[in-house]
Amino acid sequence: MATWSMVLLTPHDSSVLMSLVQYTRASEERQKVLDSLQKPDARMVAEAFFDSQKYAEAPEDVRATVDHFRAWVENNKRRRAQREARRRSHAR
Amino acid sequence: MSVEPTIGQFLAGILPRLQNDTKFPSWPPDLFALSLALLKRTGAYTRVLQDWPPDRDNEDTLENRTSRIRRLGGDWRTAIRLGQKEQFNVLNEEWEALCRSFDRPLSAVRSRLLCEAVMKLVAVADEASEGVGAPEDIEEDDFFLRATRAFLIDYASACCDIDPAILRVLPRMHTPQNGLTDRSLSLYLSLCDASQVAPQWLSTPFLGHNSINLLLIPRPNEVLVSQFRDVTDSATAELPEDFGFFTYDLLGYDEDFIGRVEALYGEAKRKLGRIDGVVLPELAITDRQFRDLRSKLPTDCFLVAGVGRSADAGKRGVNEVRLGFPPLDDLAQKKHHPWKLNEAQVVQYGLGGVLTPSRDWWEYTDFTDRCLNFVSISQDIVVCALICEDLARPDPVADIVRTVGPNLVIALLMDGPQTKERWAARYATVLADDPGCSVLALTSLGMTRLSRPDSGLSRSRVAALWKDAFKGATEIELPEGHEAVAVSLSIRYREEFTADGRGDDSAAAFPILAGAHPIADPRTSRTR
Image 1 (cartoon, chains in turn orange, green):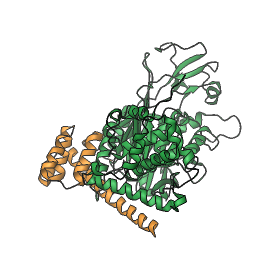
Image 2: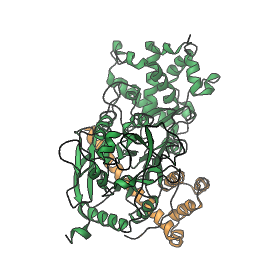
Image 3: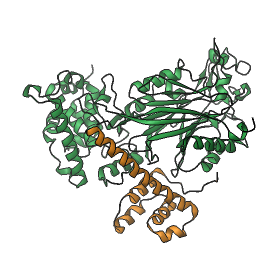
C-alpha cells in the first residue's frame, strides 16, 4: 500500500466543510462560513471542492481531502436511501 | 436542618437568567435539560407513569397522545427552520404552569398536574430533536441539526443557553428497554450531569454501507515477563509498603510490523471485499507505529488502537486509545483507571519474578484529563472506545456511556483469554442489557498466552469477545497459524420505546455479529 498524504482537519473545520459541501450556498454566505475555518489548509480544501480549476492546481494532499469529502457525500446519499427504504417498510 | 430548594432556585441553578427572565426556552435541548433535570432530581415520573396516559378519563389514548407529542415536536422543528422559534408558543400553558410553581418546593413536582406538564415538555423537546448528532444529511438543510452539530463539536453539548459546566445534553442512540430511570424518558437526547470526564462528539459520514467489516489484530503475539517492570523507587508518588508501581515496556520498533498489517489487511479485504476499520488492543503499538500505520491504511478505513509508552525516569507512562478517522485529526483518549495487579493476577500471568506477589501493583501511567470520544460514523451508528478497566468501573465514564448508549463500544484490553465466564463478558453484558450497546472486547495473543488458568485447558487463542442485545456472549477464537480475525457486523433495527410510550419507528440500530473469518499473513502461510 502506498503512503497517503491528506490535509487533516480539526473536528470544527471538518464540520464546517461538511456543511459547506452539502448545501448549495450563495457565494456571499459561503465566504462568511469560510472565514470561520481554523486551519488555512481547510480553506484550500473548500475552495478546491467548489472550483475545478483550483482542484486541478491544488497539492495532492488537498485533492485527497476533497476526494474524501466527495466520498462522504456519496455515503450520505446511500445511507439516506437505505434509511428511507427501512422507514417505508416499517410504515407498511 | 436542610431546607428544600424551590423549583425556581433549582432551575435558576441550571439557567441563571430564569431568576428574572422566565421566557420560554426556545431551543429544544435547553428545555429538555431543565425539565428532565427536575424529573431526575425528584423522581416524580415514577408516580405519574403508574396511571398513564394522563387523560384516560377523557378517553384520550396513548396513541393519540404520542401522535400529538410528535406533531408538536415537528412543529417546533419547523418553526426553528423558518427562523420563527420565538413564535412557537404551543407549550406556553405547560411552561407557565412550571413558572407559577417557582416558589414551591422541589417536591411539588410530584403533584400530578405539574409532573404531567413537565413530562410533556420533556417529550416534545425530545421529539423536536430527532436526528441530532448525526452526520450531515444531503437532502435536508436543517438549521437545528447544523447548529446542534456545531454546538456538540465546540461545547460537547447540544444546548444553546445552558452552560456545559452545569449540565450537558448529548444525543441518544439507545433508550433502555429494561427498568425505569430518567433515561427511559427520551429517544433522541440524553442528559449528562457535569462530570470530570469531558465528552467529545464527532460526526463523520464514514460509513456508506449497512454493515461494518472490522479487522481485529490481537498483537503483540508474544508478551514477555520482562516487559513488566517495578518502577516504585523512581515514581513521583509514594505508596504504603504493601503496594508498588509497575510499568509495561512496549518492545522496540518492529520493522516488519507495517508490512504484516498491510498483508493482513489485504488478505481480509480479499476475503470480505471491504474493510471499514482496523482494531488493535490496549498497549499494542507506539505513537510512531500508529502514525506509520495510519498513513499506510487506506483513508476509507478507520484505525482504533491502544497506543502506549512506558514510564521512564519517574515520568508516568502513556496508555491511551487513538482513533484515526481521516481526514479528521487523530483523537486520543487516555485510560481513566489504573490497572491494579494483585497476587492472583501476578501468578496468573507468571510475573512473580519481576513483581513480587506479596504486593499489589499499580500501573504507573498518566490518568489526568479524562475524556470520552463519541464518533458518529453514520446517521444511526455511534462508536466509542474504552480501555480495559474503564469497561469495568462504573464511574466516571460508565454513566455517560449508559446515558448516550453508543451503538458500538470497542473495549481494548490487556487481559487473558476472552472467554464467556471472564469479567469482560460480564461488563459487556451489562451494557448490552442497558442501554443496548453492542460490545467488542479485544486483547492480545501475547497476554492470552501469558495467562495461565487456575484449572482446565488454556484457551489462549480466544482473543476477542462479542456481546449484543440479542444473543449471549460469543467468543472469537483464532485458529493456530492465524494472526487476525475479520468480523462482519450487520445492522439490525428494532423499535425502542420510552417509558411514556413513544416509539422510534425502528430507528434504533444494533450492530450484530454476522461472521468471523480467521486471517493469516499470506506471505508466511504460503511458505508453510
